[in-house]
Length: 115
Image (cartoon, rainbow, N blue to C red; front, side):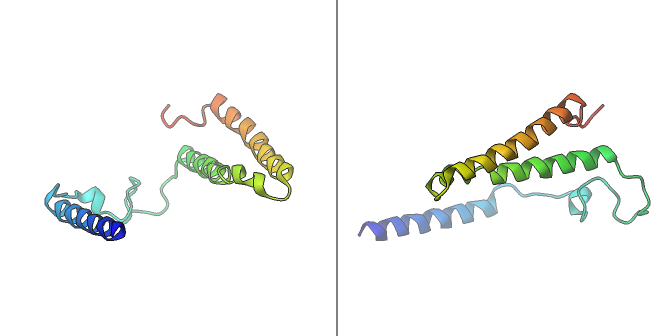
């Protein structure tokens, strides 16, 4: 009985949210949002325009530290592996490799988008 009530409540809530989402904000996208590229470049212009090196460095830093965040959550469950010290060694090595690089970028202003 409890499963039926829970399922019915979930279906009703889903139906209400779907119905309300059609009535709420009507989004009128502008020309920028309709463009296939939202990065500020003209997609139909010349491909030989200079590319911002600062934009490239910020993107690489984002990918590097985003990867670090993806690799760090599993180690707490690594305690259940046959060799927990090995798991902790690799996590420590990863942090010891990336932390000095983050500090270096921070000191030299690599994380600042504007001048």
